[in-house]
Length: 391
Ligand SMILES: Nc1ncnc2c1ncn2[C@@H]1O[C@H](COP(=O)(O)OP(=O)(O)O)[C@@H](O)[C@H]1O
Ligand SMILES: [Mg+2]
Image 1: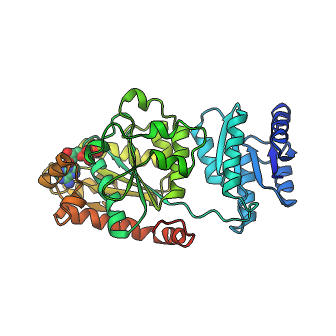
Image 2: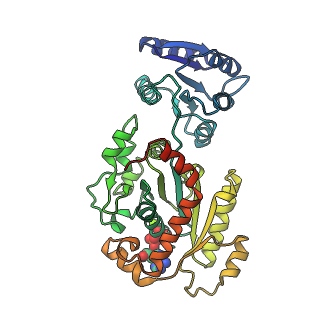
Image 3: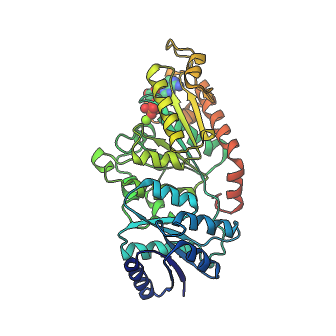
């Protein structure tokens, strides 16, 4: 019988959870505060923890952190955080602290049991199985429209697969006006993130049925085909999908929306690296600075930000040195302005790294993929060792 530790300070909610879980055949250890939760977890065999974020004495984040520290990577008891409202910060903090999933109160019994079941199956050996390291989340963010963020995301994703033999999923994070179907010649009939967030439990098998395999060998999570459909994609659900994708792939490459919505911010917060794409013009410089400042305000580690200057040889009246001066950072990568390759690629639905890989632009895209992969080799090698890679 699975043993569930439930930490919840609201007596009524606690009683309800206890009742539900017992009816479903679980053994329940019920506690009302964080310190007690850590103590009871320490007692021994707990198969799963349900953890309210707002616990007295030590809150849910502290409890999760303490449990993960005590486990020291030797075991992994699944933790589900119980959060209030749709506050992204709470969810992100929970995941950072080591939670595997979260549920927003009021909790629906069917969803709770389904998610618990999914985690209990994944960590079937009673919490002794190690969670394989997650794949890397790489975000491309355009400082304004038309600077090449989609072009870069697509070509990097394909080159990571093609040149580095990585398992890659490309996500169109521009939900309302995503371009990937056009750039990659994929029909409007293929399924999208709207379908991915529709199920109460998102697991690998379900996502496989939504993802589209592209001719290049990478998988695609497409954007919905209309703005109305895009509105149906809730940001917490989308974050859950990304998290599951990281378990399935070496790389989750996301083409992010320019608008800093909750959904975009939650993607950026989860990202291992953010590539800010700009051209050397004033509005890009202004926006890039704003984004860098926003990221530092929400505590994003600046060493995970990269700056890309696209169309670097195009005449804009602003030199590279002046642009770098304005941003107080050097560009990490620069890309040639190559109108012909870029336009042909777009019109034919065949990305440059597939149709024109020997062009200057093609070689630069491949070099970027190498650099992305080299900086992430330890994490990816650890995944390969865990046997999570296909082929
Ligand atoms: N280095 C480049 N040289 C020439 N054209 C480019 C380059 N990068 C992108 N483009 C073109 O610029 C346009 C906008 O690119 P896109 O990737 O859609 O930008 P974003 O996603 O930032 O809006 C596209 O037509 C694309 O083919
Ligand atoms: Mg785009």
